[in-house]
Length: 157
Image (cartoon, rainbow, N blue to C red; front, side, top):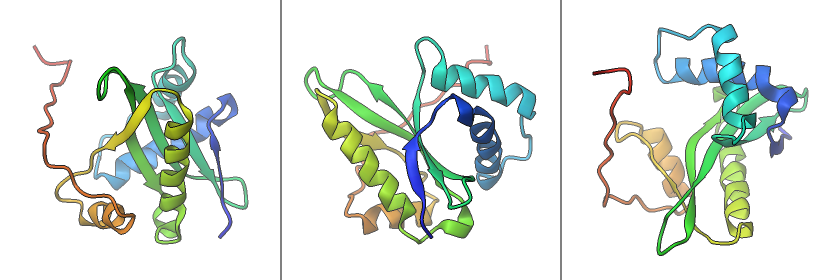
């Protein structure tokens, strides 16, 4: 299958909002936010002032959105440099194992290398996601166990 990978633009807001529902279901969520709430959040995140994130989108031959890589640049990283942080890498299940995820990772490496002062790419996956872990290992990436991730819900007192 031939796909096109390109940066998200404003015409993609609805399609990205719809794909996020698919991603939520993939991760097992049963309480899905209504599309009319999700759509303005996507617009604010990707095109607000300033944008909170960027996204590379994967289109199939029919022009349908079938994957994405959502990322942000973070500072500081090593020294006073910054890093590209990959928040989400997703390819529709019917298109997995066709090299699309590897193409997305290569595009991210190209973006990071082209950005002055960007010293690395970082991302996480769950310990109990053997498919993702195997995918990253197949690309030659080693797991880094030097960090512990903390998270707090901002809606709790």
